[in-house]
Image 1 (tube, rainbow, N blue to C red):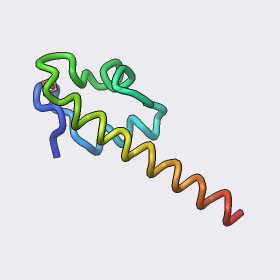
Image 2 (image 1 turned 135 degrees about the vertical axis):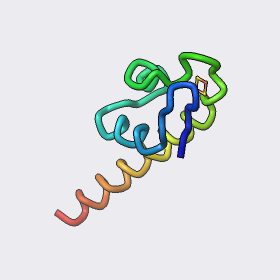
Image 3 (image 1 turned 30 degrees about the vertical axis):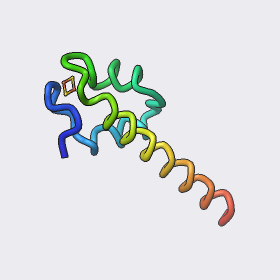
Length: 67
Ligand code: FES
């Protein structure tokens, strides 16, 4: 699903950016151009990134407890 229509950025790309180290909206703007035009995607992009980062934290936590 498109999160940023202006720059044609999808939620999948945001998850991939999170896996590559993006931690905040500034990182997404630098890496993908999110919010660099109209800015109306900021709230959804921030939420999408937060969910991706939380998923990574949970996965790391599970990995630590199973090793
Ligand atoms: S929808 Fe993202 S900058 Fe316009």
